[in-house]
Image (tube, rainbow, N blue to C red; front, side, top):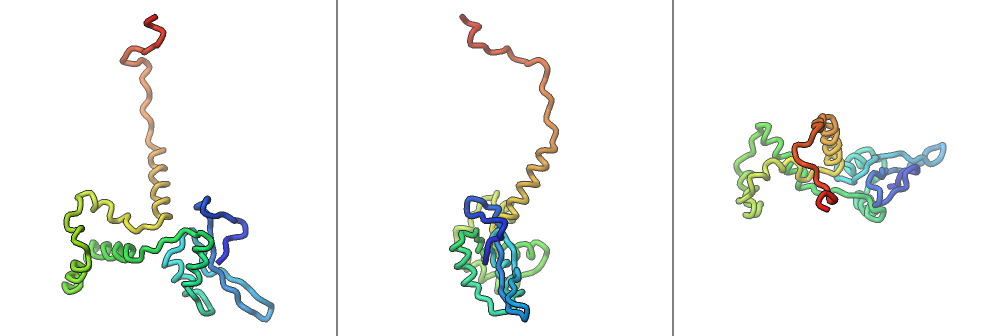
Length: 166
């Protein structure tokens, strides 16, 4: 794994882009090719790089190197899987009763009394930082297009002055 040559950023710059590269020997000499480019290391990035690799691929070595470089990581596989399952269930897919029972048994009892407001936040649990950033930029873009109310010419309350009482 290497950081792009034009971007030698670390933890202080969250916009740093990283690459997982592979070196291959060819008749014309060694060649390196990019297997994946990313800002946050996720299981999907590792799977994508592994699928493109021509040689043996060691995900543990990639994770160790990423930790040494200070690469932001997102490894909440259970949260991502649960989010996908919720989306599938909301789309009308049915879960076999045996699996539903096992899921209920595996979840802690603390979730039995969840707040009503949690339902709106469920879609954001386990979402990577890049998705959060895109949503925030879109929200700020919409907010910047909302026209501001014009200020009235005359104020409806008297002006306060610290020198008026002297």
